[in-house]
Length: 76
Image (cartoon, rainbow, N blue to C red; front, side, top):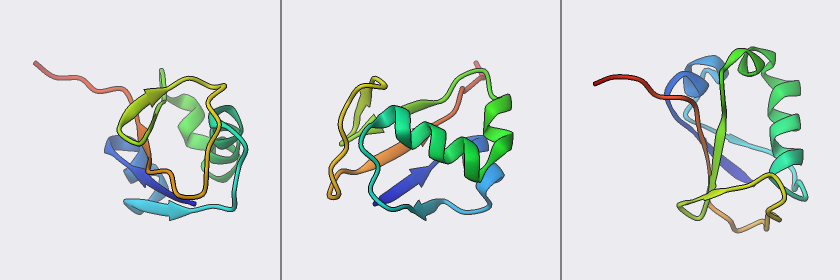
């Protein structure tokens, strides 16, 4: 499963994209990310988009889904 990372999440992981084995849902993906990259836990929030739509923790994930990790953004 390919996961795209943006903003500070990309900086923390050191890469714009990572690959993981299949995870059942968004909550499981977040836990996997926090295990692999503990600094992500320090972020105020972490949104996940699946197929270009924001997803809640209960959303199931399929191997072909386009997944994006979107950290908090700031600016004006």
